[in-house]
Image 1 (tube, rainbow, N blue to C red):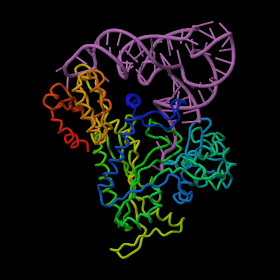
Image 2 (tube, rainbow, N blue to C red):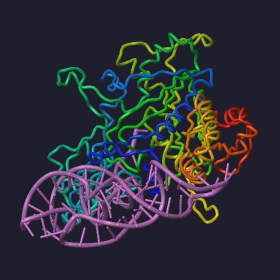
Image 3 (cartoon, rainbow, N blue to C red):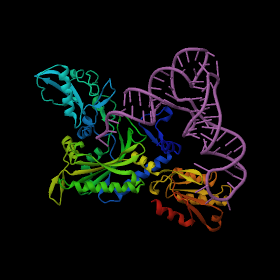
Image 4 (cartoon, rainbow, N blue to C red):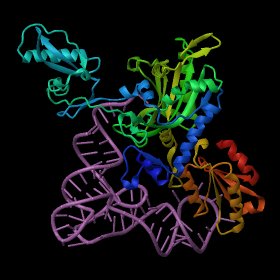
Length: 492
RNA sequence: GCGGGUGUAGUUCAGUGGUAGAACUCCAGCCUUCCAAGCUGGCUACGUCGGUUCGAUUCCGUCCACCCGCACCA
């Protein structure tokens, strides 16, 4: 992983944000090659998911929305993770995973117990209750133990509830709120009425425009709306390079389907297949991809099912994309909060309903990192090591490079410039005449450029050039006029 | 947020209480007829702020950032 991070910096893919000021945690910048790669990923997605299908249209919603949109979506209330720290054991718990109960013997409170949520929580609590009873030297029956979340504890109880780790009361902090949405102010006044949020996901911009798109794009269920855009989350701990950052970009589709309870499952599985196949087309190594099905008891209450597409990064198997069957929760919420109907009239069924939705949601930055990890290779060539990024040609930042074999032979340089000028009208092409030819090849290997064209002495005689393949390092000889079509076939 | 570690050139690393060196990279020139060749020259660094000191890149503290572990992760 360190090698990849180092290469990203060295070759101008990714820089730490504000590096000259010491950097800022959780933010990254994309350099000249990074921005090309990133753009190619987004273009490939858009081309395949929007232009390549007749049932999906695009949109681009603003990053700042009406604050009520985030009330409706539930993000204002629940996009928080209240946390509790144990001052003694230095452990940290989510307040809704930390359970506690008062212990009664014969109607008298003898103390409190705490435990963590899980299959053992009840038995653990009972065991601790018995210990408590023994210590208090009480006779009589223990009353039934009713576990509650720490969030339900009143402030006077914070000092009485013991830490689950140490068993001692008084070491737990009150639950500390942490909303992951960035706040800002719209307009000149900095009061509560001006509070707005940077969106933590692009999805709500799609739901909020559902009616607009429906009324203007002549779409019929089933259909999808796609969007690519930045989202912001004030993560507690950004981690693993660009994998979890505070500013990131999503590629999301909301695919609207009929409301029948029997219908969603087919669409859902289709989407998992479609998305999995797509990841292979952009060069992610198949053996590093997998799926993770969320167990039913871990799903949000409005969610029918959720499958993650996982990628094996050097730091572990992590989520790349989430495909969720979300019922009609979001549209219903927006209907409720906005007072505007989100119903769809189905001409075939002759009925009105609020559509259900399947949501494939992919992170651009995570995809880019997965591509770097898939493409990076160190090879041995004639006793020398070669660093190479084996990008799928369609997403490679630079599609081809043109080299004059010698820079001090005017005819060769002239022909090289001519080829370069003609190719650069089609895609990003790099011209390099500095240094030995082998060095130029290796430089392009590290940038992941799939093809290098070299103009040599034969070229000015017979009009052919050599075209060298990045992965095999083999060369073919082509007439100048065939270069463009040869590369077109492979990179578009 | 806690504990531990780290911070010197674009990269990877040396080193010192008297302001620093290497390799590779990069740039220029010479040379060079296809895979990091050679020669010459050149650019570039002690994360930040403060303290101790005659003097700090070095010692101490603060902050920032990065790495590992814990915890957290719509």
